[in-house]
Length: 101
Image (cartoon, rainbow, N blue to C red; front, side, top):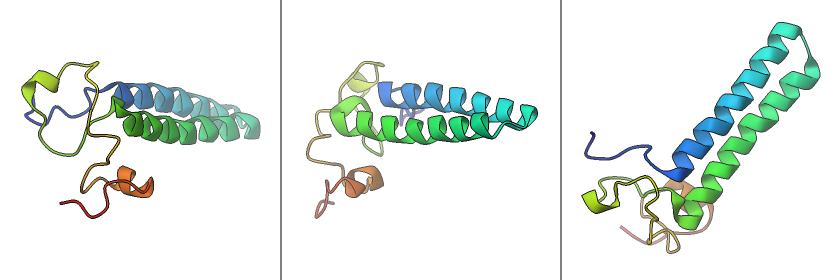
């Protein structure tokens, strides 16, 4: 396992699942030449970004870099999310983590 434990978070897996569904709907729309399915697929894919971001900000993601091994399990909450993470563009977009690091 990588020392960074990338993607083993509720936010990561939820976002991936929603994006996969969005991609499937988008692909079906392209194959069927359906503007409604294409728009729906794009909307679902965009929603996956927002859902992942919201879950990250509520502590279901992880900060950039190495996490302690005891926080590698899937359901581990990130207790530092409320203050924001230094060098995390998602936190900075939400107005968190400025002036750190």
